[in-house]
Image (cartoon, rainbow over the protein chains, first blue to last red):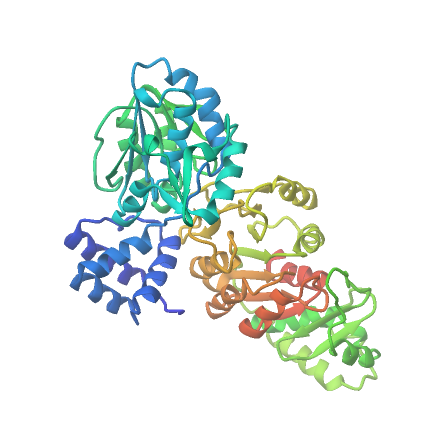
Length: 271
Length: 279
């Protein structure tokens, strides 16, 4: 397909989607959104954007399919191992001084990152006094995350990343192989609450010692990034940690409220 | 047509000796002399214009246009080009505001030749190379040596002049407001970064003002993107399959995108210089 997607038509689609379903894609960054709208058209067999719009407004199933295509569901356990190494070696020793630790994974997709943090906390014997909140807007992704089950074929990459993240033993300890899947240990799953939350429309819902939000803000235009980061900021305790990952920068207007903690892996401290 | 004339001009400057080497030209247009793993950057320079004509000359002393070509069998052709060029003198040229380059296997050595030949323009050069997801520091270092510093952009960083390279494991996209955007959408053509993804976003953001270059590589990534740039009115250059270490990516782009110029690195560098260097 090489259909020209006019900005005006995209705007109309997402205005209507917002009014009908209260999912807000209006301020998503365009370059990537265009690609995914294309993908959605291919997936649903729509011949034009107007066709896709009609399908989506007429049927909730069609809308679910659209959300599933628009929300990018690609993640790895311990993706960018150095990011987790900083958390494990430099942040966790400080977090361990809190009587209870609350961690927020914003935009958790299918859960790999949440499980990665749970593994680190378990290995530090901190999981018992910890609660991990993992949120996303995609019901399909959250469903997969709750199952904590991933294709066996991906486990080699998971294991390799784990090693590079300065893991203390082997990742194999934390999952079992069932058929062609790896299933994360139930003790990890029990400590993670997967729930629906939108950084675009919802507000702060708790107080956390640390929040990780990677590869989510890249899909937002600048004003929406600021909005989402403000929600994250309001959710952090004083001197709480915020991780954005190595390729994402804190927008200028928010920089005065944070101090840099890890320059390369982009962990910040609030206040 | 203005660009076409310029490209012809470049091609002409580089193969003044084409008349005396007519035989070579035909030979060069024959079966490609490459084989996998063997570099075939030849001392001669050959290029194919979009009209299909292939020309070759031995060593590149840059001469002026068509003057000095005499007694040739295809005088009329060069004359008509000269007329076309003259006719276009003083015509407004499109302001080029983006150069994007894509490559895969075998492209790194070509890039090291190409980048130093590009003067430091006020136009950003954005590169997408297929590289293993992790361990790309070597690559950046290799390229940094070749030209000015080569940087991996952050998300939403503004598209300022310089040399930019897609970070490993991310698609690199250009937004209309001339900022970079990163994405971890699934790989396109088995690749992340994908050249198609970069070029297609560039086509949208820069329209006819983008220049894209496809270098060596296996597979066909970049061909669709080059087509998008072409359809938006931009310019497509392709490293000739005869010179590329892995000809499949250039060949795919030639088949699909009808490039403005298919040539060796030197000629492509000169063509970019013509389009961008003096604006």
